[in-house]
Length: 227
Image: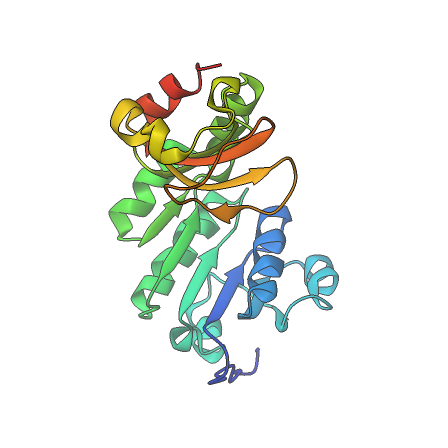
């Protein structure tokens, strides 16, 4: 049986358990570590556990569908837990149910289908994510040439990176009045691949600039048709 781990560290923003160390889970866990979180990786596959050992704060081989195992790991003491189990639907649902039962403050679960997502929502999972579907939408907008990058912030509200229309060259954001005329807000600007800077009314747009825009999906889409 796994030994209970004490991962509390007052200097860290949060302690997060990532259950399922496949491609999605491992990528997410490593990014959390980079952001300053302490991460416990859990998987029943010894090969995946060994592969993740060097990059994560702690890793353990364990069965996440076993309530006693989760208790011994002190899962209820974590600020959040992410269930990144992909192929085993039963294990994903049972693990999520146990995390909620044990009182984990924030439970995030990867859903592989709309039916899977509905079941998780009915269980009371705090956050259900659809990484494949979300990435599909993001790439579709890029392939269609509507944007250089695309992030859905909420239903019908997005943030995108686009090339500045050539007609904007030499004009300030105050003069362009983009929010008034098009219903979109320029959050930041950057030239080519250079770092972005916060946009102000005095920011001058130049040929070759990229704009980081936020706004309703339909208005962003209409704005993307400008040239």
